[in-house]
Amino acid sequence: MQTNKSITRKEFLKQLSWLIALPYALFAGLSFKQNSRVNRAKNIRIPLEINKGVTFRDGLIVVKEEESVQFLSSKCTHLGCRIYAVEQNELVCPCHGSKFSLEGKCTKGPAKEPLQKLKFKIDEIKNEYIVEIYK
Image (cartoon, rainbow, N blue to C red; front, side, top):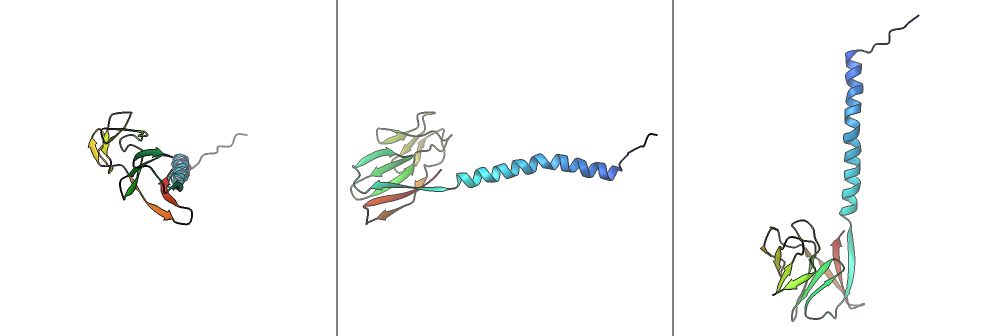
């Protein structure tokens, strides 16, 4: 004896929708997990006694002048290459030649956005800058 197990069109579409939705749900979950990891801040501690000029350290660029200091991300805004060179008072990306002023403004492309200025605090007890950088 043979039984005919047929399903209705409605049930077929319902099961099909689950098969279609499952990869999207997995992708969304993985994306959320990755983004939550990316947005975590990391604090980098640097001694207050920094030499005047430009220093490259721990994924950031330190620009110290007479009485001021600023911290920039060393990540180029074009494709994310690390900047670790200064030529003629400009920060130079080794990958595609983008150039930035010591204030982080883009002076030559292909990058179009300025370098990210990083927030910092001063720990007067330990005589350190505490710079917040995102991984």
